[in-house]
Image (cartoon, rainbow, N blue to C red):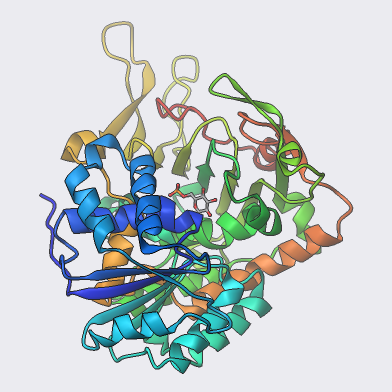
Length: 494
Ligand code: BG6
């Protein structure tokens, strides 16, 4: 049974309060936590942005957003009215310090509360906003600051931001969010690995042939074209979400669930990633950009057409990563992610090696190696592919069968949005599912040479039709090694 443990009363100041993230994710998640009584009713959400808006207009905007981004089953009109009526809106300039007085006055009435500053802005504003938070004396012992990803656009800029924020807040007060870590099924990777003896003992190069991590989306760049074009899929998705998944899959068992014990193990994986430099970038990475195609039978324009100009930004990345550690010697991790792909699916595939020797005649049974598929979204679940005897008479013939657990069916729940969990963890003061400074920097240290090699190369991202599985070069990347991408998402074959 799900348990709702209320958090302490808090004040949360959301900077970037008119932005896409606030409307799409933060406000709907906060509404749901208030609705379920986990966020105590006296808590306050103070929205701050540059746009001069009346409080009434801001509340109407959020009411609209809740109607757009919440499912019908999640909406309760009376509760939406109550949530919006309690919102405060402060028009201020995060950089110049103009308009902060009202924020100061509002916060001054509750100096003892947990105080969260959520920076849902561009990363170059993190430093200036934090300096103003300090200048206006808003930091209390129970204050925390939340930074959205990506932290910077390379190692140097990430360090500069971490230094700026770190000069104002203690590391223990800084919550670097990677919302993938808040997804229930991502946390389930830890449960699967460390709460079941059967997997952990097989979790190594002796038994595992390779691992695939796919995060495919059907959406395009939505309302974020300007931001996306400067960022691209490698910085947007691989530097954080996909590498965090890789860490959870590859790390050694932490000594406990203590936040630093878990993060120490993830850091070791990031540090053990074999660098991909100029010499390897051609054989180990593929970048793509969608051209016109169709999603669900509807025509979709290409990325450059949407941008109104040619662009070198990648909307798809596939790469082969290697973890230089005894456990993973010779086991490649194939990662791929893209916008406008054939299907929305996030999935991990652990491909085991075949039996060392088959005693079955090849004519009747082609032995397929075991495969563990962990579906992160949608249709969250786990599927284990096994060889079994084909039932009935006709001799001993084998065929693959699947052990298939759908979490939704098994537990009869709808998974909460990752942000709901993470926002409450910030209030609780639990940083386990947030990235520590050294993790973020280690991830950039591995990503930077790939970005540099791409920038130096005359090649453009390879085109792929919207609604496909990416450029053919991504298929070649894995097939060169005699392997194939797992593709039949619905029935787990492939
Ligand atoms: C975000 C990226 O971090 O993750 C988006 O900025 C992407 O581009 C999103 O669409 C995917 O997250 P989810 O939770 O929808 O799978």
